Amino acid sequence: MSATFATFGNDLHAGRRVLPIVTRRRTWYLLGLVIVVVLGALAVLRGPNFGIEFTGGSEFQVAGVADTEQTTARDVVREHLPDNEPKVTQLGSDTLRVQTEQLDSEQTAELAGELAAAYDVPADAVSTSYIGPVWSGDVTTKMARGVVVFLVLVAAMMALYFRDLKASAAAMLALGHDMLLTVAVYGVVGFEITPGTVIGFLTVMGYSLYDTIVVFDKVRENTADLTGQSRSTYAELVELAANQTLVRSINTSVVALLPIGSILAIGAFLLGAGTLKDISLALFIGIIAGTYSSIFLAPGLLVDFRRREPGIREHTAAVERSRAGRDDDGEPGRTDPEHGAPAADARGGDGSDAASTGGTADGEPVRQDAGGPATTRTARQQPRRTTRRRRTGR
Image 1 (cartoon, rainbow, N blue to C red):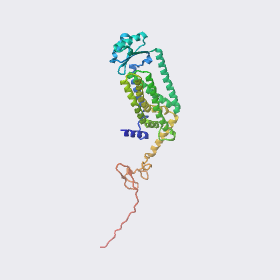
Image 2: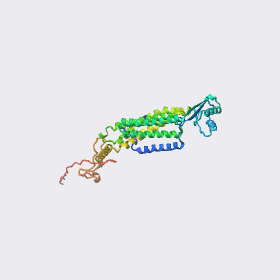
Image 3: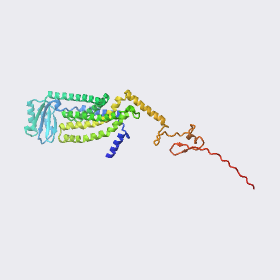
């Protein structure tokens, strides 16, 4: 299996096999758009699950419980605060986290005592914390500001690195696809969006851009002497670059996903909610989305952004004219694969079609191999022999 995959990768890198990445780029655009729209619609219907760091409120952690039934905590909160809908999450094997709206100190103390009594734990086993609206608003503002600054700096860096604003725009659009898809998956599965999630998002941005830069570097290498050759168009060279980096991107992503998937499984099923799970889910989804966008979206976007440039259009037209000229010269003008010369024309010396007359110009028959073209045989003029009968007397 590994040998087959390695052979497949070698064929892609050498150009012996080509996947239609750029040729069918609109199909890949549509696929990515459909996935984002469907998951985004489901996420909107369900609603985002922001953590207490962004919404503010009071938090209670009940440790050492024998029964982690979450309904008990909800009933206690609803009885104490009828208009308050709590958010209850299990942390680990014997800890529950209860988040409510903002409570004053008296309400917090009363609810902590009732939770301790309901789960039959000491009063000091219930810890409380409070996040005010000012602090949560400040966290939200700084998060949004950090993401915007990150995007601006990355766009400027890529424009300077590639000396091309269109390459930067293509990379940023692919990055936008990754972020929207990651956020949509978060909304669908209902995981809580916390500062740890934001850290995961920023890490995903870095990975996605790194993968795209690798592909665009190969594009720049392949197109460095674009106008000095007339064998391939710009779009074909970009497609070759995407094929050459495909296996490398898949291998890198698989190696990265294995430990992240393990961390996600431990965080989700063993430790429960927490920063570990928040970061690992963002990384897991983001790496998959980043691999797809860097190979199947970014190269096609780059071609669409640049194909109307005068230099690209003139070179593409020159390549097409060159190919048309080769076809005109070689049909019959096909190149003999053994000798590199045009194939011989099966016509007589006077231009008549020997195959249609059934003979050569000088009357020699045409020899035709089964399944092959008719070939002529050079006729040599033979002098006529005259025979004399010798009369013999009787």
